[in-house]
Length: 143
Image (cartoon, rainbow, N blue to C red; front, side, top):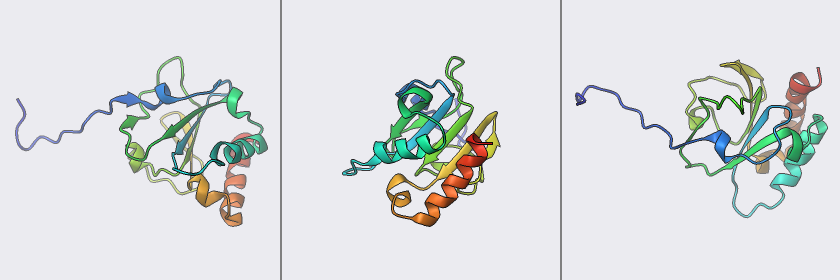
């Protein structure tokens, strides 16, 4: 069947778009690293998105993921194809992407604009990281 020289990659069991909640009216996907014992996550994320002119429940599909959950970003379902993907707390490699992306620098990849940021518990107390995120969000949403 397979030779010992074949390189095999396990297929993720689930596409991330099937783990989301929210209206997705603006075709924005937010992928957030789940953090135990931190209850301010959605409130802080809501403040971030509101500053960028987005409503969490209405405009964004939110996926809060365990760090070890085996999910895939691609392929996107035809009916739920994000234009912007905000990633909090994951590297591209952790999401199965072969992509070199600097934090807080929007990058176009396979027809979607990705923006990688630190996890929310690192962002909230750090003024410098929040400033970097704000500048990046302005580039993406407030042109």
